Structures are given as C-alpha cells and as structure tokens.
Length: 112
Image (cartoon, rainbow, N blue to C red; front, side, top):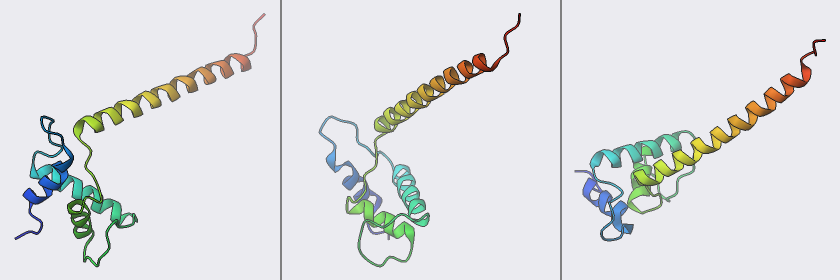
C-alpha cells in the first residue's frame, strides 16, 4: 500500500481551495504528473524542501507534496502564466523586428 495514498495527497493539495471553487487536482493523473515533474527537478539538481533521508527523488517529491512544501498550480494559473509568457515573447519579437528593419534600412546603399 502506498503511503500517503492518492486520496490523502489530493486532500492536501485541495485543502486551500475555497468552497464553491474548482479543486486544483481532480485525478490521480494530476498527482502523478506533479510528483514526476518535481522528481525530475530534483534529479537535475534542485534542493529538497523537506528534511529526511529518502532513497529516491520520487519519494522526496511525494513527501514535499504531502507536507505542502510544494504547491500544484491550477490549470487556470498555468493558462494565465502561458498567456503572459506568450505576450512577453511576442513583445520581444516585435521590438526585435523593428530594430532589425531599421538597421537594414540604414545600411542599404541609396540608389541615385
């Protein structure tokens, strides 16, 4: 048997959700994705946020989630973040294109 169970983890993650709001996690799949992503971060060198000796990065990730050391963003939060990043990238690309076209206009020889 897994400890903590999926239900326990879902209750911990959804504990901050106000009544009437959509829960952050609706399925075991969301828990699995979140812990796998955190385990990959730990493998890549991130520092654990919990004390203890755990044999595997996934065990650390599960412990972090069960103690609320990490939070799972809701899909709405992730969508807003992606929109913000897309807007910033678009803005950077737009400003970069203007600079390039201006530079090209200045370096092209004038025809008489």
